[in-house]
Every structure is written in C-alpha cells, then in structure tokens.
Amino acid sequence: MSSITEKDHQYVWHPFTHLKYAEVPVQIVRGEGAFFYDADGNKLLDSISSWWVNLHGHCHPYISQKVSEQLHTLEHAIFSSFTHEPAVKLAERLIGHLPKNQSKIFYSDNGSTAVEVGLKMVLQYWYNQGITKKKFIAFENAYHGDTFGGMSVGARNVFNNAFENLLFDVIHIPLPDAENIDQLKDTLQNWFTNHKHIAGFIFEPLVQGAAGMQIYEAQYLDELISICQEHKVVCIADEVMTGFGRTGEFFASNYLTNKPDIICLSKGLTGGYMPLGVTSCAQFIYDSCVSHDKTKTFFHGHSYTANSTACSAALASLDLMEKEETWTQIRLISQLNQGFVSKHQKHKALKDMRSKGTILALEINTEEHTHYLNNASESIASYFLKNGIIVRPLGNILYIIPPYCITETELKQVFEVIERFLDQL
Ligand SMILES: *Cc1c(COP(=O)(O)O)cnc(C)c1O
Image (cartoon, rainbow, N blue to C red):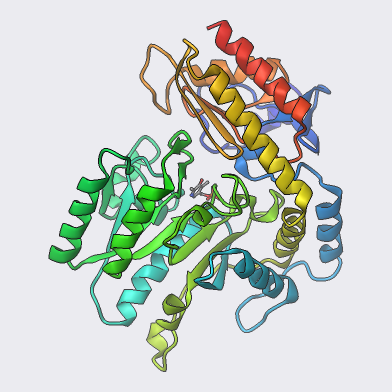
C-alpha cells in the first residue's frame, strides 16, 4: 500500500463498496484519452468511461482549455435572481438537440437530483391544478438514483432494503416485450380508467443501466407512452445513462415516436468533467407553475445549481458531440459491438450477450443466479485489471461502455481479452 491508499483506508468511505472485503483501491494519478495511469505506472484502459460519464476521453485538451478559461472568468454564481451566459447557452443548445416538445431546462447537480426534480415537477403540476394525483408507475428492476425519490421509483432491492418502509409506493410493471405488450396495455387502460390517482410514468428508455444493461424495444415503450399520454399521465424519460450518443442516437428518446414530457440528463452531460444535472420539460409543465399565486412556485434548487464551470464543460462537450468525427466513432463502436455479439452469442460461458449502440453487455453463466451480489463480479474485474482493462461488472454481468475516443485497435484489444476470459471459464 502506498501512503495515499493507507490514508484512503483511514479517512475515506467509498460509495457502493463492501467495507469488509473490498480490495485496496487502485490509485489513479493521471488520465489521457481512453486511458488512466495508476500510481505504479500501469496504463489502464477505461472501458466503462468512469461510471458511464466520460464521452471524449480523459483530460481532453479542448474541454480542459474551455473549463480553464471559464475558471478565470466566473467560477460560480448564485442562480436565483441572477443568470450567466454558460447556463443560458447550454439551455438553448440542449433544447436544440432534445425532442421538439421540450422547451425549458431546469438545472441541478447529478443524475439523482435530475430525477428528483422530474418527479417533483410532475407532482407540482397536478398540485397546482388542485388535482390529487400522486402515484408513479415505473419498471421492475429500474434504477433512478440514490435519493429518496429516486430510490422509491427504483426497484426494491439490496440498494435500498434498509430504507424500504420510508419509500413511497410505486406501481412496478415488467419491461414490455412482444409477449406481454397487449396485456400491459390492457392493465394500464384499466388503471387509468378506474384509478384516477396516477400522476406519472418514469422509465429508462431502451436500456436499463444498473439493472445489467437490459435492452428492450422502442416500439413497445412507444405504445405504453401513447396510452399514458392519452390519459394525461406525465411521462419522464430518465436518460441519465442513455443520453449523448450512448444508444447510437443523440438521445434514446430519438428512437421513440411519442416523446416524453420530461427528460432527465446527467452522466455524459459535461463529458465526464463535472457534476451537473438537467431536467428538461414540455411547455405545459412549466406553464402549470406560472401563476399569480406564490404558493404555486416550484420550490426546488441547490446551492450549486447551474454551476458556470460545469456548464462550460457541458458546452465544450457539446461542441465535440456536434462534430462528425464523434458520430463516425459512435457508429464504428456500435458496429464492432454488433459484430462481436454475432460472433460469440452462442458461447458456452454465456447466458446472454446484447448490445445497443456503444453499450455491450455479457451475462456470464455462473452457478449462482444472475444478481448484483453475484460473487463473479470481483474475479471478473481482477482478471481484466491484470490485462490492463478497467471494468466494473454488475454481479455476473460484464459490460463495456467506452469513451468515444477509443480506437478500433483498442476496442479489439478489449474484445480479445473478453474472448480469452470466456474461453478459460
Ligand atoms: C446513474 C443513474 C442515475 C443516478 O445518477 P447519479 O449522478 O449517480 O446520482 C439515475 N438514473 C440512471 C438511469 C442512472 O444510470
């Protein structure tokens, strides 16, 4: 152990970390492109974009330059009664990329708060009209963050057992597929006609991230959104993970015909540089809070709301997102993933393998069932680390979600290590 990892052990409590059995954390000293360098001088490929946030590589010269300029101009400013150019420009440009029905941007600090704001907007929308609707529908196995609202709409599992009685009641429905779609539609129709208290529907469009990169089809989600919108049930797309090209389109909502009323963004928003959350909404949600009555104000905010440095990182990341080279890379990664899936789908070590855009997930056969606490996780991670690749499996589900700057050669090296790993199982 180095002095840093010793002090880390003495003073730091890490997130999602088993405090008894966790290995000594790897000390990262530098990042460049798709790589990290650790304190022992090892070069490690960050195949998971540092918890799905990094888009263009570490210490990207352009973003670093823009952030640095911003730091010498305006590092942060209170965002109530005051405004600044980075937040306004970012809002304008995001609205330009989001589905056409989105018209306002509300800032917060991370994915959980972006979701929390979305849920509160829905509740405030009904409250301001004097209508009692408080119930949400969400998908089974969903993950929407670690705050109480986020946990409530998320699956009840090991992440929130200790808080179970304090979470509000949510109706969880299975992901739609060819087999259950008709029944699901009937169920929703029935609820909406007989129980008038359903306020909103929240979902991770097309890919459920933390559930193990579970992929489902846009067509069926579209059908569910359509019924919700017919009955004025407000639809929230949690695009915290799927946003900014991850699924092969700018937003996963681009695959949908029926556009969500509210969209939550975070992870890739600043290119992985700074924490920032965004909740966008359709005009009718915003309008419900425009009133002579001061009690109808949307009372939500954070000290660091719309932090100007974070907004400048997001603007720089958007500049890169708008470049053709980035989309060439996104298409290349998506194609290579697809090729890998076709080649190895039937591998005996696998229960399943799937990909959507730049996301590739492999469900490894283990004696234990597929589960977040599956013990395979640690041994998979350490195999890859020994081979110079950073992964962080969700139990026995190994996935990669690389930064877009990864080269074809580097991605193929990752594939080779995956092949070797599967063959030795
Ligand atoms: C990561 C994630 C969140 C929570 O975001 P944080 O920034 O970690 O709070 C919410 N929803 C989805 C879909 C996510 O993947």
